[in-house]
Length: 146
Image 1: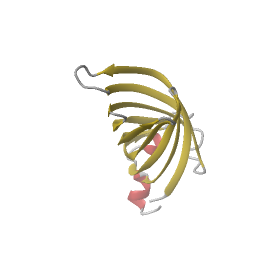
Image 2: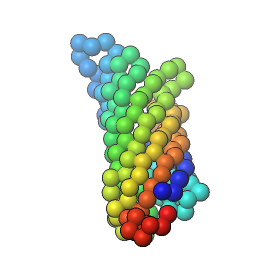
Image 3: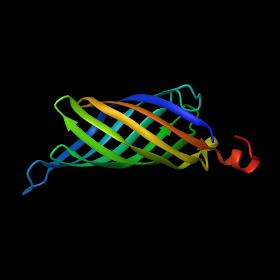
């Protein structure tokens, strides 16, 4: 499986925050984040990423789960899930976890792979993320090629 690395800057486009009544400092959040990937792998460089996530944070720490899609100019796509942790401090929130490809279209139909991500909120509406992982396209599995 090829190794890949990349990063993106994302902007929160939609966000909803709920405070849990009866529980001090407990919040639930749903958000949509969109940005453009940067990677040395031409299959990921310049792709538009959108992800939808939920967070459950109590006393500044919690969990994050969601879904992502990478869309390319030629309409090929890959998508998957992610889950991780959230930690907040006076300097902002940090995000860390894992992702798994669950499907794709075009060249990415049947994609398999996974990886890790690590990022931070640079403002209440801006995310900076680095990621690394491995993937294999369905055609490569059939032919034995990498």
